[in-house]
Length: 88
Image 1 (cartoon, rainbow, N blue to C red):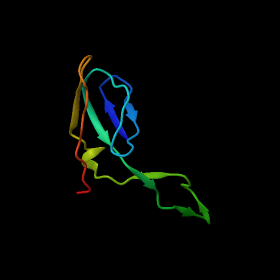
Image 2: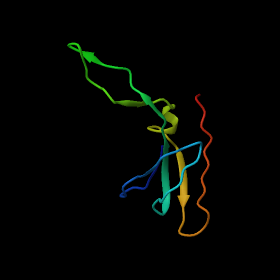
Image 3: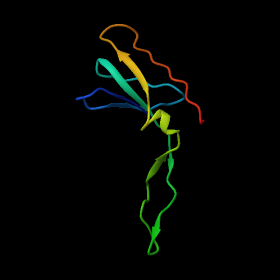
């Protein structure tokens, strides 16, 4: 998924499918986070799985929590933003 965040606004989150995404985003300079998820490793306590259904982001932090990616969303124009994501 991809998230567009502008200070004071609720982040706009969109699903990425086959390398593409679409949807609304607030106007302005947005901080962009990109995440991809897989099922989390099970955590077992006292014989019970405690995190059933949990997922974890497997992309490097440079795309999410430490992202420096930005997008300038405007009222007019294409507003097409492409980001190269690698596992390194």
